[in-house]
View 1 (cartoon, rainbow over the protein chains, first blue to last red):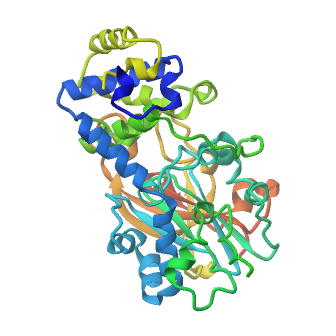
View 2: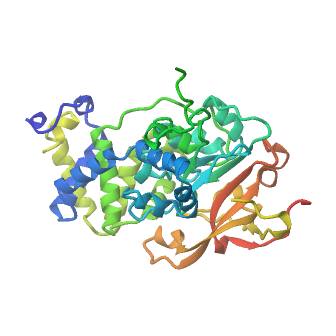
View 3: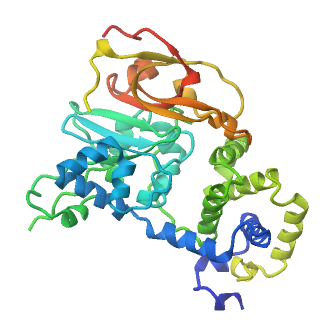
Length: 206
Length: 101
Length: 100
């Protein structure tokens, strides 16, 4: 009874697809050949599931509250994030900072490069033909579809993640958050604000 | 595809299925152990042509690219894969049935 | 980080070659001129790695392009920019593409 050993999932009950058939076969061959083990695959999935935008949000919130850390992050974002305890593997990371004059947005036109070790898996739209095609040519129009309407006097910097670097945007710290702790600030930092398709959230109105 | 005309950015999001997470794990583990490079995977993905982007999902393309690279690396043969896929399909009609564990 | 003064910029042109196969130089930037944003050090050439060859180590540069120099009059905003990482063998010296 296959369902006895793992939690019921709706996708388990659909008709087996050719790609799923290949996935099971490849996985079992790799285990049979001693390339990997079932436990190693399970551990890798757990490690990926544990990565979420909350990791990046903690990094951004610290940059907002710690001048030395902000400088270290802009100098070498991977090293600074590792120093906070995040496992980035061999990732090379560049942090780009939004200001009153400049807004940064990240895209990968060649595939779907994304700082997955810090933010988790990318959203589906980041991998879409529309986002990858249009962001380098009409970023303002793309951003407006996300509800982000930038003032005319703000310069847009698009970063095409073409090779060995990955990118994270440091959004602008929202107004009205003076004296906030890094923990409270992190709750305002969304995934999209670290890709550049949104601003950080405004503090709730009390 | 940078700069080509395209429609509105789709905002809907799907939850990753278990088989998709397993494909992702096989990609990370296989490249980490030196059986292929991410560039080798991208080469296969690009060689699939533009149509594959429309007709296959992200992880459908990735498992095909991983498999192609593993065969090129000599980790297993096409014959072994074919026999194993037939064995898998014979276990039952759904993904849950076809998984041994 | 401050943008370099226009007169201090090192301008480079991306080669316009269109070989088949796996390259990491986006087609929309080929033949376009930008300036060096930063030098990233050396990395194995993905054009080798894609075909199971040992990657020759090649300098990788972040190059910044003005939208007007990529898209011409079709640019959404002429002075917005695109940064991309380009391997050095795809780059050649160039003059500023427009009057500073």
